[in-house]
Length: 117
Image (spheres, rainbow, N blue to C red):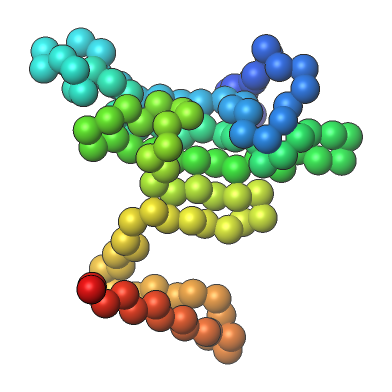
């Protein structure tokens, strides 16, 4: 089986928030300049704590740019998948037909309604 491994060869001690590997998408030759040549989207693996013999907890972070850089290390995270399997989405989740959360027998729905002041 063929594979590609992105490695952080610079750090010998991985601590919280260290970036282990990244994939970035950009159009550096875009004629528009400024924002149009910045990294437009990225996916990166970030440590969730200090690595040890029994710990390598890592999350995957997905970022997209609107009018800013989406480079790894940016703070405009769109979606994060933790090592525990928790998915955090910064925006709205839209489903075309249906969305199942949990199992049919154990569905719990919590609604947070925010009323503008």
